Length: 286
Image (cartoon, rainbow, N blue to C red; front, top):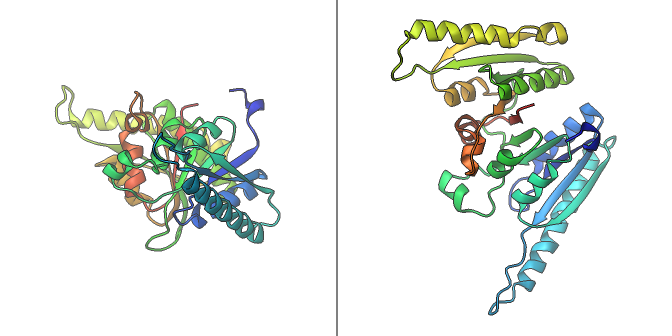
């Protein structure tokens, strides 16, 4: 999509059945930093009328509840970020689908997380974070409830593996860090293969070289952003989630392919959305 067609706004998905405050706060603060319009969007699932059941009364109640929740969220955000332009949209359709469609036109989508178990996530029509992250054309931020403390470390953790999506993630991490006045902690995680014709040392050093090549030049472009980069050995999900504890967030590229939603997200992103307690920012390839 041509950048001229992208609206200069951030969309926050408001969940009428969950705590929407963390996601709205993150989105409003981001809109303030970037000088963008903030749109709060709440989607009411469609009616399921059949020959034998009239779903109109139930759908009407959902719509009324949704409108009240959306108005409350707008009022709450206006009171705390009065300088930011904030509007609301009440949409008709499955939330995941509607927010994925909006992602084609906006700069950023912000969502809350209910931390559904994997089976619940697959079976529930209310699952939003995974399908939107999988299909979005723009970066998606998933903000979980701030369990176990706040953001003690003023930095953004970014996963680096040399791929196009991870380079896009690194670019966004530096852009965000520059806006927020924080550091970037770039981590390349090496998971030893079960079987390889090359020695472990060779593979490890190749990965380390790739890390240095990937981060080269970014400090010059963003001289006010402090960069720390390192190699770690282990599971990418566990290493990144642990490094992200009490930070401003974890930034990762989305590299999954295929028709199934979970495959399009990729195993690392999928794991982080379940494991990490800080915000997880997923970036599609440039």
